[in-house]
Amino acid sequence: MDDLMELLKTRRTYRRFEQREISQEIIEEILTAARLASSAANRQPLSYIVVKGAEKVAQVFSHTRWAGALPPEQGQPKEGERPVLFIAVVENKDINPDCDTDAGLAIGNMTLAAWNRGVGSCMIGACNKPALAEMFGLTQQQVLHTVVAFGYPSHASNIVDMEDPALFKYYLDENRDYCVPKRKLADVVRYL
Image (cartoon, rainbow, N blue to C red; front, side, top):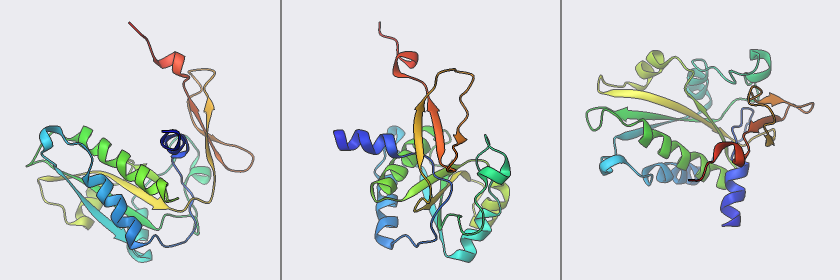
């Protein structure tokens, strides 16, 4: 269990990446982890689109916005820092029209499986979904939920205790590493 808790503590969002390819074996582990996620009534309404190769990744990247809590010059990955892989999470509304929870569970599994192999990730909902849906060839019954960026991180991301609830935004330290304030357990749990 200690290994799992350490994995959960260190699986943070990463927004700058080494330009190193992710093996097909790891990609398949990530996708298998998504497939194994729990699903409401076991309807399994999600499908996935894998985007790899520099040109296709660059096309998807051009439709994404990063790190909304930071100015673009600090949060947007620069050339040489961008992800090397995207996986789009698609909701098939003809199978289940209300599957956001399924998507969250699948994304959680994907990002944990990736991090277990040293691959960082960033969930991106701030993207041009109509343009990406067209690029991906989605039907009217398919809705793009999120694109998840993957790569080997080139920075650290650490949890810090949140001392003031008004100061919830993540920030960069002097090394350009991310500091992510989290509420303390006593601040979010109540026993009856």
